[in-house]
Every structure is written in C-alpha cells, then in structure tokens.
Image (cartoon, rainbow, N blue to C red; front, side, top):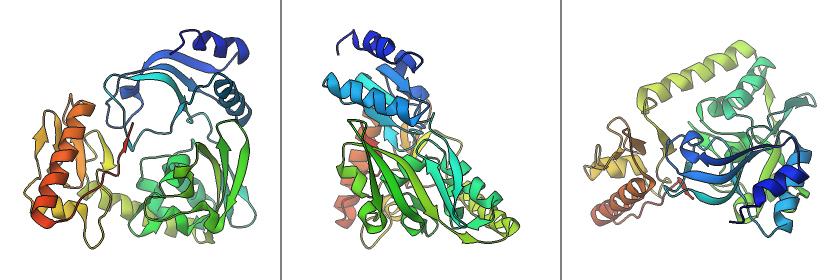
Length: 300
C-alpha cells in the first residue's frame, strides 16, 4: 500500500479519526486479526462520503467494519484502509410507528430505543451482537425474527460516496443474504416499521429471549456467533453434534462444548486455526451426513 495514503487522508480530511497499524483483534468479537495499515472512523455521513470519494480517486477499495461480530480478520493484517462505521449511530422516530437508524448503531441499542418508545418487532435483535448495517447486510435474525420482517427502506452508500435508496423487496432480504452483498459500498441507514405495544411487555419479551441466549450459547468466550449457515432440512449445530465434534479443536480454535454451532477462541486462536477448524468440521459432517455446511462467518 502507498505509505502516503495516511498523509493524503489527513491533509484532505482534517479531523477524521485515523489510526495506523491498528490491530483488528481489538475490533472483532473473535479477538483475532493483525493490523490494518489505516483504520478510519468517520462520525458523519458527509465525512464518510468524502473519505470514500477520496479513496476511489486513489484507486483504493476499503473494507467496511461494523461491530466485527461476524468477521474473521487475517493474522497477517490488512494492507489497506478499514473504515469503521461505529461513529454513525443516530437513531430517531419517523412517523407514528417507524424508526430510522444509522449503520453503526448496535442492534441491542436499536431494540432498546424501540422498546422505550413502545414499538414492538425488534425484540429478537436485542441479543444479536452486531450493528444495524451488518444486520441488514446479512438479514440477521434469531428466535424466529429477522430484519426482513421490519425493514422497509434502506439507504446505501456506494464507493464513490453517492447514496441510493432501496425499498421493500428491492432490499433483497432472504436467509442470511441481502441485495447489498452484491454491491460495492455499505448500508448507511435503515427505516423500520414496527407495531405499538406496552414498553413493559416488550421488555419482558426481550429479557426472556436474552435468558434463552445466555442459557444456550457460549457468551463467555470470544466467537463470531453461529459458525455455519443453517443447511436445508437440518441444523448445523445438530449435525456437528451428531458427528461427535463438540469440543473438537485446532490449536485454540474450538467447537463450543456448550453449543455445537459456535466456533470459539479459547485464548490464543489464530485465523488460520479457525479456518482449519471450519474446514475439518465441514468435511466431517459431509462425510457423515452428505450435507455440506457453509460458513456464516465472513472470511476477510
């Protein structure tokens, strides 16, 4: 990478938060990943747009990072620019039953905002450890709820800094997929349509779902959530358990003893160990069941 890019950004975009050689392990829930040459965190739509336009002018394609909860960053680091969306967290009411939220807002805070305003429909999102942008990118879901059920309009910023709007079915939301996966750029903000309800009733449902999550998932160890997508006609965790792979490990990367659908970092796992673990588990399950598991984790 051109060593002058840091200086170029600082000169053209003074005030933008930048760090050089920032360890990705500090910004991913797996706690894995080497340094990014440049780590930028815009705190406004205008700053983000200007940064993307500047990078495009230099022929550079950045990587976009939200909460880093579904990402496996490489051990060797990233010889380029990583843009964090965590500075874009505005959330507001729109209309009687709508909420508009920016991409960097955590799904937990989005759900709490809705609850406090007596709006139901986002309870499932409260325990998902990601952001609005990441949630829309992969149509995140849990316990029968998905973003597709409540997302009505999304603004998307392309790599030139221009904004495009996608409504309803144009968002392309399906099981762990969206139209945005095929587009260069990032989800900027999404509008949600919800239903009025008593805040206390909404909070009770959120707490019940969180208790389910705590009881069944290895929340005490670094992970990236579900390691594999749900296969047609079955469940990844059940298939992995049937193959006797609970606790199976490669170095410090392991299949959780608590929930076979999770790959966890036991302390000093590397990205290579996680990749080897996922590959071996997928091969073993395929040999035993004829079903090929596909990673849900985004492999950078």
